[in-house]
Length: 109
Image (tube, rainbow, N blue to C red; front, side):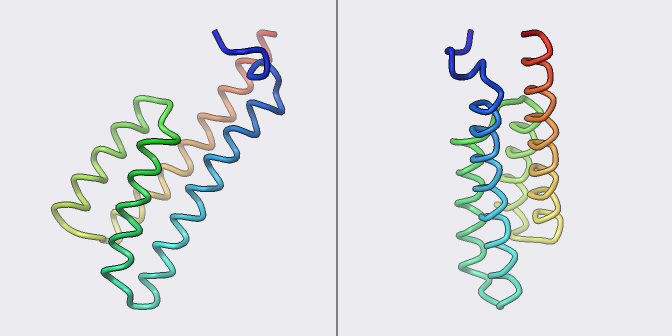
C-alpha cells in the first residue's frame, strides 16, 4: 500500500518524471559521446545508464528483462546501434508504464 503522498497524482507523476528525465539525459549523453567519437567514454556512460535503470527506475518485469538483455548485449557485443535502440525502447516503455500506472491508481481513487 503506497504512503499518503503517493496517492496524490502530482507526487506520483513527479517521481515518475524524475526517473525518466534522468534516463533521458543519460541516454542522450551516450549518444553525444558516440557522435564525438569518444567510444570508451560512451561505453562507460552506457554502463552507468544500465546501473541507473537497475537501481532507480525498474518497476515492471518487462523493463527488468530488457535491461538484463541490454546488459548482456553490451557485454558481448559492445555499444552497438541495437543497444542504443534498446535504451530508447526502455524510455518509451517506462513512459507508457508510468502513465498507465498513474491512470489506474487515480481512476480507482
